[in-house]
View 1 (tube, rainbow, N blue to C red):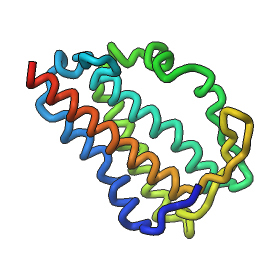
View 2 (view 1 turned 120 degrees about the vertical axis):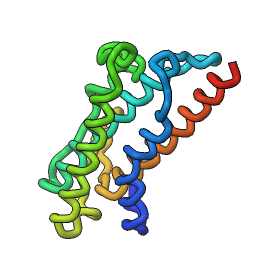
View 3 (view 1 turned 135 degrees about the vertical axis):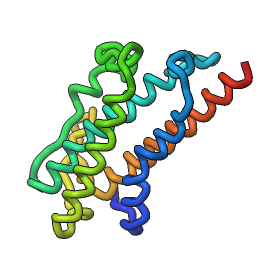
View 4 (view 1 turned 45 degrees about the vertical axis):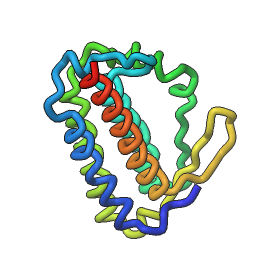
Length: 168
């Protein structure tokens, strides 16, 4: 796992993530947020919570890397269950998206501020223990890019669901 070479571009996409997501949600009603796609999958409401929670989880990896490169980050507890189970346990279907959107913004701003003040933070890394117990070195820049891409991926899915809704 490597940090992308174009740090400025990756950080800009990371910064814009919450705005990109909010733009995709503009004008959607609660009925539209809760619409379940014909072929199955998560509703838009569930996707928003998933994005925010993913960012929140991976923020810990970034903070470990910035504070203690010998530190280990693990999602073993999370990976022990399918994401659909976490969605149920964390009530994705019934919660307002407002708090999750605010959490996403706050987390992104927090990480961006840290990176402004920590020399070479982009290249610092944490040790990540995967589901098989293997250790990988994960640079901050890799996590930033991964989480940026995560938002973009799901915004495309939100657009597909919105299109499906409008074609009903």
